[in-house]
Image: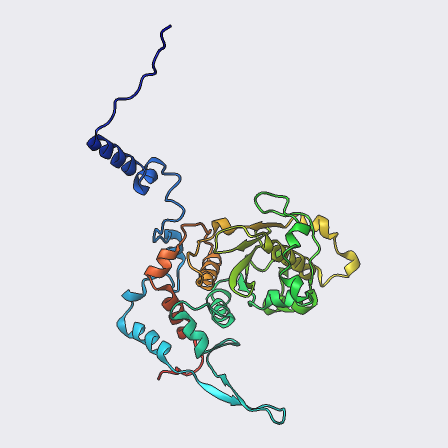
Length: 361
């Protein structure tokens, strides 16, 4: 009984094998993949050094320009300001027997926000940014510059959650107790918020006369930076036109921990929008909240690729959102932040608004 042998491909020579391997490598290159799949764009981890035309057109304060192309005297001003020594003052203790201590003196101030030299130098290289850096910048370049946009300070959520215990404020089980039913991060049902304390933030909206004027909202955008887990910055946005509350995290992933911030901000709006009415006439929260969606939009956020630029991304994303820019991965990226030396642009922006005498002069 005869058996049929399966056909086999002819054996390749060493030269032929090398050519085949090279051809496959060329076919799998990043460039060829992007050409064959133009909708997919670039590979996720590829640094592309991009900034969208919309972002550049909206940049009315030259935050997104290349620092090295600015006039030399301006660049020298920033360099000298970074090199300026810290100014310290002695703080005497009121307790007998305790030694006096020293503390940094504020050398930069704008509209009630202050910053020490130590804070300012955080923008020089790779340090994490502080509340002072972020609050002063957003006050000047969003709240005071853009009509119908306002920024609360980074202390807002700290005060809003002020009745929470330390373990509640970073409750790892919160999202198991309050799951997000929607795959795209939209939550329509009310939830209990551990530590919610509206009383501590009840006067925040008085800064601009309240959220309502007659039957109209007074703002288009409310932006709030938040310091989370002691080492990371995110920004939350209230879009009044769409009645949408969003969170943007420059890590680029949807972290369910921030559902707590989204729901707390929605509940804050409910209280503040009705605080002038007798409480018995307030609508049911469950029915009202269905008209205010929440969304974790972090997958749309420009993404940081290091462990220290979250504050920079929070400042720039807030700056652009207030100017009507719809954020996407390629609105700007880490490579662009690095290539234009954006940290020094932010430092220059803060120098330009300083109300105190120049410490360098």
